[in-house]
Length: 235
Length: 177
Image (cartoon, rainbow over all chains, first blue to last red):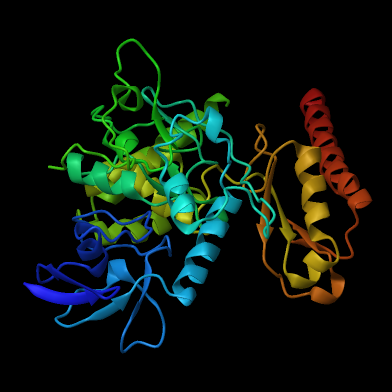
């Protein structure tokens, strides 16, 4: 066991765990989108989980830091909050904010982070820059809405974990990056096991299960807790 | 797609299938295989991606993800006449994007695509090394400097007239025989 001090509170955690996980386990919330418990190599791409660690002059992404005995961490400094707010603002600027008609409303991780940071979902400083990508309807069970997607990569991770091979993946790059099933018209050629782990893990309602009498929609099934986190354990 | 194009594709896929056998079934061979296909045929057809995926034991979407990440791969056959519109710094400043837009509108395709008759394909390139002539478009091997949106139609029309003339000559020689 390792003890460290986070926000003047002493916490105990297992050796080898990431700083972010240790904080979350001990009830200290740090905003995060792309981190998942058990992910081998956290991408650290959402740029939200910054903390200040004594001994480092710059804030670090807590998902990429392993806990050390006697670490002194602060999660709510001005510097950290500013970085988080800017990263969040940038995410929002490409996000189609229409919570009322979004199935993820009230379960959405973005809403939770906005509330936590005391940050409105309406942009004040930046202009919205939505990506001009059409919604793909070719997949038999899943619907992907790129303007909602925050590209956290959780769906790709859980799909790989469940099925050995990801049936969906990042495609293209830069501003055009999307989650893709396959190809130009996005007709999937890989066999989907219909486990819907991807739709369940999606923090923002960008991956949905299509309405059909044969599929049970996890968004309707209520398999989410209040925090919008998947409760189904990963194999 | 006409019949000859279809048989051509079939030959290509047969070639790719035999080419794949020379590669070990290792993940790290993915780029080398894609590059070989692109180099040989000028494009990586989606079914070819699936063949590669199957050979390497990857899922097709993963192969697609890798292939779309790099600009060097295209997914439809290049046209007979390849139009490259420069969007380097100088051309961008002089309105290269408007030239590109004009080509796209005139041919009703987007950059990276090929017209259904496979006559023209449009690509965007980043600097061709003659910035003094900006904005520049290169069609096949001819450099068109100081391009203007109004010149776009003329360039395409030139090729269409040329094509018609060749067809007429062909018909004439056939009727003479």
